[in-house]
Amino acid sequence: MVIVYASYFGYAQQGNYKFNNFGNRSILLTGNVTGSVSDLGLTYYNPSFLAKAENVGFSLNAKAYQLVDVKLENVLNENSKLTNSRFNGASTMAGGIFNLLGTRFAYSYLTKSNFNFNVNYGSYYLNDNILALFPNAEKHYANIGLNSRIKDDWTGLTWAYAFNDKFSLGISGFASIYNYNGGSDLSHTIESTGNEVAFYQNIISFRQKSYGLFLKIGASYVLKNIELGLNINLPYIEVYSDGNYSFSEVVAGLDPSYNNFVDNYFDDLSGKRREPLGISLGAGIPIKKSKLHLNVDYYSGLSEYKRLDIPDIDTGDGNLTPVNFNEERRAVFNFGAGIEFYLSEQFKAYGGFSTDYSAFRSSANVFNLSSTDNKDINIGTNFFHMSLGIDWKLSWSSIIVGATYTSSSDSFANPYTLDVDGLEIENTLNPQIKYTRWQFVVGIDVPILGKKVSDLFSKDDNEEKNK
Image 1 (spheres, one colour):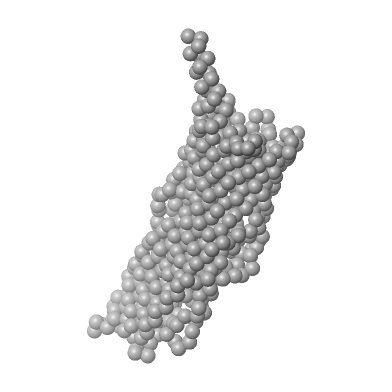
Image 2 (cartoon, helix red, strand yellow; image 1 turned 90 degrees about the vertical axis):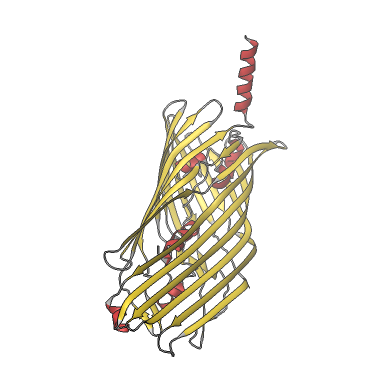
């Protein structure tokens, strides 16, 4: 698709704090479990619940595959409609709970963000603006190539302590390995009568690497008819960072005073990754054998900072041009609710809804040099998540199946607009982008180390003795 496509959804996994959820039942409750988490997702949502959780042994995260569909309108002309669908794996989680030295621990691994996209789109078109610049133009071909990858792997250890039957505290520490790569290749080729050819190409790429630590502190309190939970996400502690950036541009076939070729590459750049303080409050309210889950999440803002400290670059006009690879976030509130509906001893149904508002005021956008006046092509969008599923309890495990649905709609800057000396191409259309994601849930809890397995073997031994 267009440049915005990869940045749009790659950023969504950074500036939208509830874009991915973790834990078999927590996914089907759209993450509204700060005060009521009951699966391995407790390591992420509220570590204090580890103190009172049943030993689930080893658990595989339920999020498995996703179908993403994106529709773009009004990119080239008023009737243009571009569609792209893809089916791939989604973020994952695995881990388990164990007892050691008289207390309870949990280990977990999760893919906090996983986005990998490569695309190339080309089109032939002529409009009045191009013909005004090149009256004898017979053919115009515009091409956009794009790649973007974000991978953030967390490996964590959780500890919790129950002061009494009502009050517990817990802490999770996650080591994060974060890699963010992106690039764009934009070109315009115009052929006029007499085999005259004008050519423009702009290539940008970057890489950011960051290693660090996330800490979560959780507390829970049980009242007579309600469970309450508090979870504090401390700001990211960066241990190591590194990056590089490149920019090249070619203008050829115009008047010699406009023809230009520049090439810039910077390695070992100082970089910074920042994640804000977050506070979540949740409640689990029993309704007979069912339960209502409520959640409110707050994340503080971030003042503007440099994701990568890039030197001023040579763009061929005799002056050095600054590269504003900066980011700024606003404070956001999200809210949501989930329902755990009792059907029988073997079956429970789950459903949920949550908001997911973008925190970006401005985003560190490698593509901004390809847009008019250095405007950001994307500064984030809002998403809404819904879920529905079933939990089937067997004697040896629990099987969870279901689906989640995410949607959003927004506008973005047109990437076909150019402001280059001798090649000013204007496109006044207002492109629209519509995003939908279906995630198909299949997960299993196997109590390898738990009491259920011991009971199962004891039952088999008793049956053998009675024969």
